[in-house]
Length: 187
Image 1: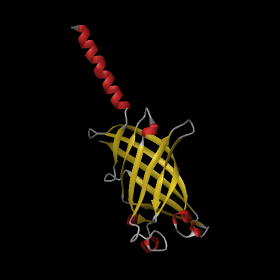
Image 2: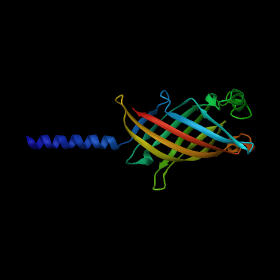
Image 3: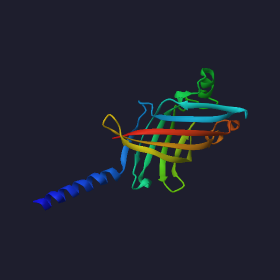
Image 4: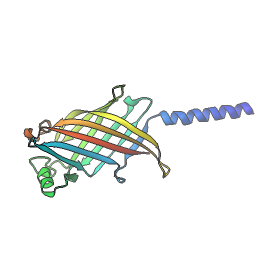
C-alpha cells in the first residue's frame, strides 16, 4: 500500500514538473497595457522622433526546455501610431509613410527562436507598409511566474533595427530602432 502511494506521488510530481517544462501558450496582455512597441527614428539628423503603437495583439508559445519550439504572432493596428503630436501622427499615418488606409496592420510571424550564452534571437517575417521582410530580434526573457489573480505570466523584451526604405518608405528616414516589451498570460 505504501509503495503504491509513493509511486502515485512520484508519477504526479513528474507530470507536474513536465507540464511546467513543456511549451506553454500565452496571449499578450494588451488590455492590461503590458505590451509596448516603441520606435525611434532620426529627425533630419538633428534629433529623434519617438513614438509607439497603442494597439497590439497577439500570442506566443514558449518552451523553456526547447526554445526552438517557441513561436510568436503579433498584429499591430497601424492607426494606433502615437508620437504625442497629432499633426505629425496624421502625417505619418498618410500615404507617404504608413498609409494606414491601404495597410491597416503591421504583422510579425516568427520563423525561429534560438538561445545562446550571447542572448536569445527571434527571427520572423515582419509585414509593414505591404512589404514582408525577415527581421532578427535580440530577445531577453524577463521572467515568469504566478500573478496575484490566479494566473501565470511570462515577459520578454526585444530590440531590432529596421531600414524604412526596406519597407517602401522614404529612404531619407533611415534606420528605425524598435524596442518591444511583451507580457503574456498563460492559457
